[in-house]
Image (cartoon, rainbow, N blue to C red; front, side):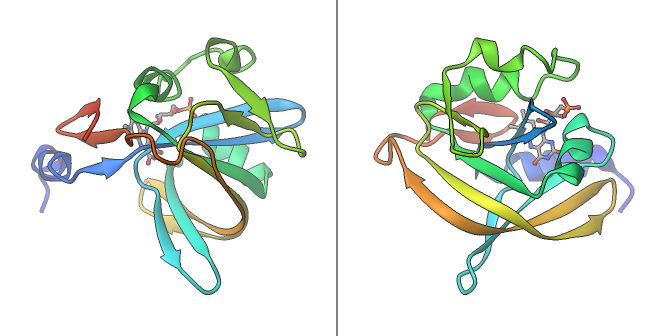
Length: 159
Ligand SMILES: Cc1cc2nc3c(=O)[nH]c(=O)nc-3n(C[C@H](O)[C@H](O)[C@H](O)COP(=O)(O)O)c2cc1C
């Protein structure tokens, strides 16, 4: 199988939820939109997301073993686009969204369905990505009844 476009086209038909993973390194905020997020294990509670090896977020998550998964609602498509934009200014990236901070200072996007706080359990190689497995240490349900943001056919929207 050596046809990346055929592969991309197939995966585009796989509907997924959308998260923004946030963390903090040296007093700086890091964030990345991801649709590779899923659960791994119930006992212990483990989740994973995949991060492209040549992204700035890869460098950040390599230096921080504590991070937050913000599960996005359908109202947060603009935030999903923003935290997927390559080359956005890192230092001021939080200024365009509403957020608050957890006790460790990690940004929590306001209006999210909820947040999972995680510590890195393992990182595995996965081609041009790394597979980051996290242990869930806290679950916060914010707008828990809100419609989720869904990614399908390269589009972000309500289900
Ligand atoms: C809906 C959507 C889902 C994405 N999912 C992932 C993902 O799971 N893993 C990943 O590495 N990049 C994913 N991306 C791309 C990253 O968000 C984007 O490349 C990254 O924020 C920019 O890299 P930077 O950390 O260097 O700024 C996704 C983009 C979109 C729009």
